[in-house]
Image (cartoon, rainbow, N blue to C red; front, side):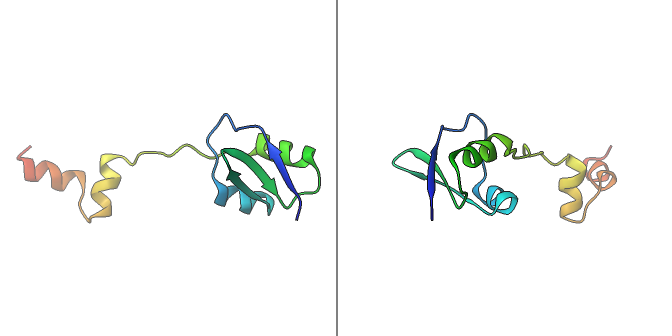
Length: 81
């Protein structure tokens, strides 16, 4: 399997998402970044340039409460509001 050394990404990367998107592996060796599974250096460079990992979104208070079976109204009642 061919491996291509790529420039260190300047944005967040996720190897699992990259594999699902491209079918190729993204990995590091001795602090260098590599893509394996593609056929050319251009494919490797283009694939990492196109790779965008969504930024994590913090859940709202209502979402956190709902995850444990509570609501904002329950919280207000518990606080006496």
